[in-house]
Image (cartoon, helix red, strand yellow):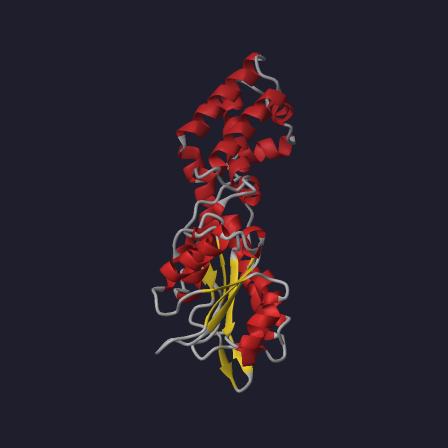
Length: 306
């Protein structure tokens, strides 16, 4: 794990200081004057002067960096710029280069997993897409731990398998929903998890979750379990329940059922949890879907059934 601040400290600042030291020396500054202007030791200035500090070629070649060094060097040399003002100018460029620019690129090279995330990472944005995706994946993992550690959960897994899912806040497609690749299955009384949660790997549960949200539900997390009248009855004690038609396409059936419940002013209209279920048809296994604010919340509700 490497932070972008380490890229700044280890690569950007030594390069820029070296360039500034060289610029000021060319303007007639002594080593002592350079050290005072940059707030570093004379021995550090000596290392810069003798090329003992490595420069990053891509930083040196960047026109914005070169322009900054020339502008700051001239400002310090003429007295028009104080060291504090120079610091502010450098900080502004650092922030600019951190946001999807040169420093962000160097950060991705140091942390290849950032590039693999397939979403732009705004390092200083608390609401960046990468942070949200990681929060969602973490929630799915917590939900999985909650269920797999629960004695008896395997007995709730339907024949088609179960899944734990959570979507992004602005989810539109299954690619915006994180879940377990494949499905959880019952192997000799234990719930087996085939792999780490990923986005775009759950067609079935993701479709139900997205359809419910399309119809007005606010839940972002979902877990599906085996249907039984007693299961629905137990869940109905604390959560609104909505039945949908298993003989219609899933998305259409769920959208219509949830929308009808919303229009009728039932408990689902202002609830952050929702239980959807269908009682089966020819070739269609009956299933219950527990929807909640997060995957971890949905898992806790399901755990209460065992």
